[in-house]
Image (cartoon, rainbow, N blue to C red; front, side):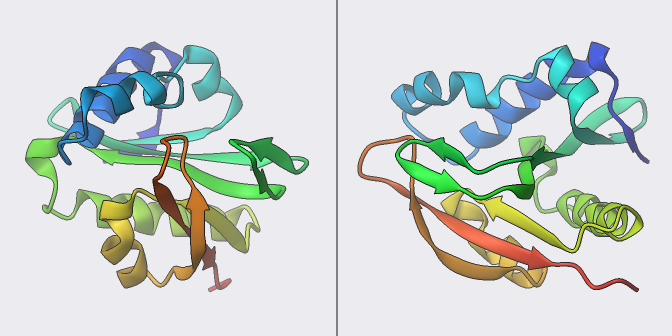
Length: 161
């Protein structure tokens, strides 16, 4: 079942963020840099669009969409205003079982229902194939918060049907 997250689930979502990112065996130093961006606060859940995938009473994944109301400078790059997929994570033991696809399909329907026709995605390099299969258009590489590393920028154009 996919449902809205509640603020009391912030710690669970933070744990999923770190565990899912850890699936790719990144060095510990990366997690020190990512600490703030991977940590979900209760206020984050209240202020943004956050949905969880729950099965048998356990949260196995989630996604979040943020709206930037103006352009933002981040790590020396300009991120344009609009809607962005900020997080999409699945518990590592469940990666490859279709949960990400279910979350993405839900995200698509949410966008259609809320008249969001374009979604920016700064993706993890390991997720390029996933986003390409979902119909997202690769734009270019963006500098990462990690020195000498880039992250792919995708745009997902949502059709209203």
